[in-house]
Image (cartoon, rainbow, N blue to C red; front, side, top):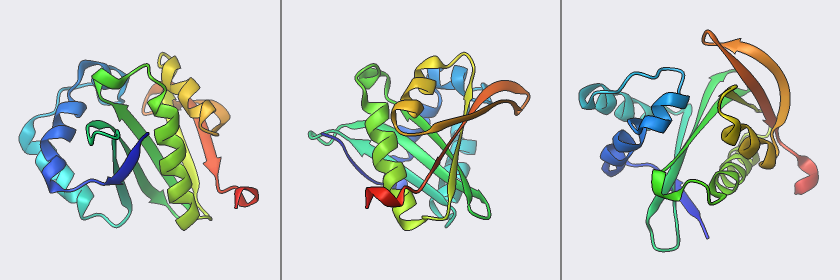
Amino acid sequence: MLSFRKACLQDIELYFHWANDSSVREHSYNSKKINLKDHRKWFVSKLNDEKCNLYLFENNKKQAVGQIRIQKNKMFEAVIGISIDQHYRGRGFSKIMLKLSTDSFLNTNPNFLLNAYIKEINLNSKYAFENAGFKFSEIINYDGIKSFHYVKMFNASKK
């Protein structure tokens, strides 16, 4: 069983550790290691950004499993990103995390379109987004990299 909460300042080092995981860097659009000073500045700015939702997921033992960030970037559009702690990968948590976070976000922001951009080499993420109700839109050149573009919208019939 997973639960989630909004991230807080006490999570800064955990997020730093996750951000610099080699697999996370490989699948990120900016693959360079992040230094702690820059991360702190970024993290605090995101905590204070009304357009950003940082969700931290925990198992029933209150162990951190992963995170999802949903950043509103245009009128009625947002971008979603996910990372899973290396000890919890391959257990199906990404689908659950994506469903819980997007359902919560879209229930309070029903007019929004969620965009997911996934590098073509990242097939595990592609399948996780598909299994969480995202629909394939197109293959695009995102940030200079050939990527899958997936979208998800509010589904009023689920209410």
